[in-house]
Length: 370
Image 1 (cartoon, rainbow, N blue to C red):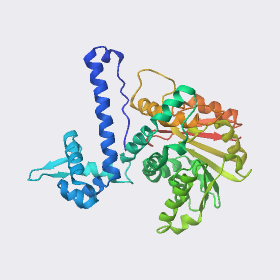
Image 2: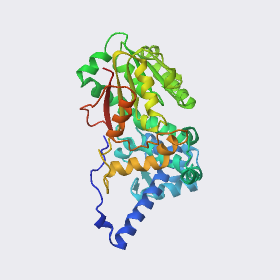
Image 3: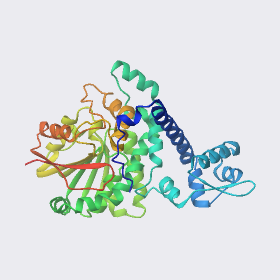
């Protein structure tokens, strides 16, 4: 599993011009690598190297239906930057290591990071809109970010849901018992691509799980993912539904539990959503919010996790939240005190941080109704 470094750059580390310039240059080089990773991911170059083995430029181009001159330039860049190895020969053949195969091509690995390149590059496509929003206080809605950003979030979180979420929930006896009740109805708010919904149904075989999202393409993606899963697990398909709806449309007193996985900070009116979810719960029901495990308070400089989350907030989450009016304008960096305030304002009686660790970059909150 990928863990973010807790190290932070001291202000004194950047006091010299050379050190400051090197930091900026390192960022530029990282950006170029990110663009190249997107190309390798979307054009199938990584997958071909992983599944079909080492290849020269002409060979890889033939395998993937791409132009050999571009293929050669990409292969050489990847070798120069250190992501691919090179076998001696004329022409040389390029190799993706076992570690590279897992990180860049295995959609079930907790170390799968190729989707992050899609997220970053998808956000850069909206730079004109972002610049306008930063000037006039508007936003850029989730729908405008398109396929790359939508799919990247679903694909990046899928391994965590499949491999880490079941054990995390089972580690809390109170939650495990309630979710395991026969016929338990569970809501997954802001379900996105549906992997969280599918995992909940698979983890608790007696449950019925209803995924809801306001983004029509996300609901379509979730239904497609469910259809794929039903080929090997029809029971889960019978117990999962996906609906395009707003939280205010949830039936009152219907669900034993509700979840919101990494979406509350994007919502323009989080208190209203939480209040609607609370009304949809049966007496004694609860809600679990999974959101970024950012620091308790703002501190600068911050660690790598803070840097990553502020980057997402600048380019995706805050502009999405501010694309609606009125907006709480939360942003990705939703600190625990903010979440607690939202939940109490929505009528929940208590908010606890669950003792769940080593689940990606995330913190789990338990919102109680009584």
